[in-house]
Length: 173
Figure (cartoon, rainbow, N blue to C red):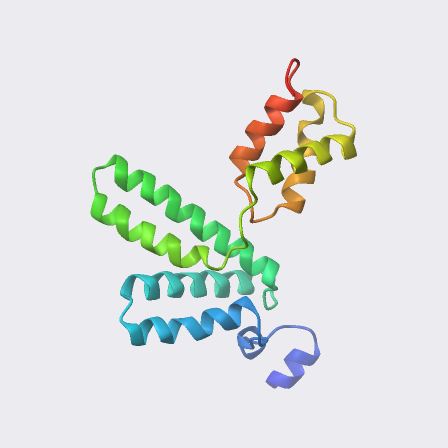
């Protein structure tokens, strides 16, 4: 079976997976890797290569090229990994490795949307509570789902969890 026949049947080929729509985050990543190489930015290049590999792995898992939203999910996951590594290296007294991880995190954060401010998160939590009709701890899951669905990749889930919990607990808000 030829590549064209495989594509016609809806099964993505390796070539389809690597097609990059112009203007997408994946296209930007493809442009920035050679630029980092030419500029001699070894840590940044390493982070971008790891992100590219993670994106490719995810495309293989889902069976289609990633949308920008899916790309942001992958980048968010990679930033979380860097944050965990920074904490672990700092706790172990390996400040050199923690600094490298911070530099990698900085390179990856360029692919994330701007984070929401405290006020925006508070307003979103209030909107979620009003929209879902939650009036106590039983509505926690509905409110979290509402907020995280609208703020995907732009807010830390732990911070939202704390705000929602304090707002929904008796005596809160």
